[in-house]
Length: 428
Image 1 (cartoon, rainbow, N blue to C red):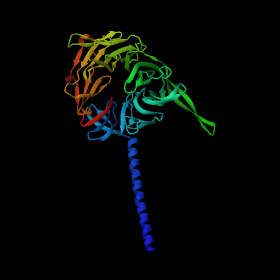
Image 2 (image 1 turned 60 degrees about the vertical axis):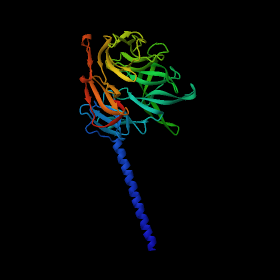
Image 3 (image 1 turned 180 degrees about the vertical axis):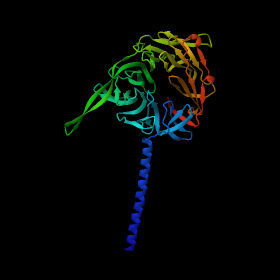
Image 4 (image 1 turned 90 degrees about the vertical axis):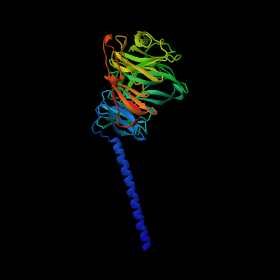
């Protein structure tokens, strides 16, 4: 009897210890989850930081970091976060979960979680940007099927949170991606293209559309009765059309809307020669101009000329980096695989007003980032990802030709982050 009682006591003690350890594990997991989702940045972000998806050398702390250009310090913010993107007014940033990319979170500068989204209707989600402080811009591979599609097919499309931009009627069999939103949020420019496995993008063209917010009411039913209606806000694309009337054998890629909403910069690619040439057009498709190199040998500079520019390039590529102002665009002049120059082109003068010379010391340039007043590039070493330094330049926008200025490395500022970071994504 005593032996049976001792076994009972032993069993109770073992069960208690097991339950205790189980509760500790649950509590620890819960605390870790709380730390992940109840974020608090001390001190709060300023909105001027470069956001990085990075990890420390050695595989430690993979997630989102904030690089402060003033203190030159990188701060670890969010574990397992990826693709952080600032909102237009820098009040928030959105990011994906690295382990579960269909989950997207929005946080403010203090680290408070504003919203959590799960996109269940698509796979291969990619957070792209913002329309304004309210609508997130997402590209995703979505499954389309139905009467108009006798077969089941996957297409890349553009989503505003849950509202898809559907181009099937206007561009049947085409994908949609690489969007750019007008500053007032009322228009969108994007690429439409066909895709061939093993070949890549084909027949890429720039399309534009008008965006309109609408409220739709969804009926909530139970036991075949409508109990109540829920208002749902959606963003619809209307009047989808091509931006230009350029020949079909010419590829159009990488649209960028000007700050005043009147122009769109993009690139024209000749599939025969591989030439990539920056162009600017009015938002209604008129007034096409392209960049062409002029000048003596060793002193060639890109000039803005009327019409389509397809010649005059030898191993050169002029790619649109972004708009500095409504009258100035920044273009990357490269000879594959190296960046030779970054030109700031004055659209009024039709010629470059400034030229930045990247370093020529064997380092690679991982990301080139542009703000309204500054330009920065992240230089890497080793496998091409280990961050060496950040070169930061204040942009100079002279209005007269005689004030054209060449900005050399000595005119910028070098920032050496105090952490050894392997960078996978950067936004500013």
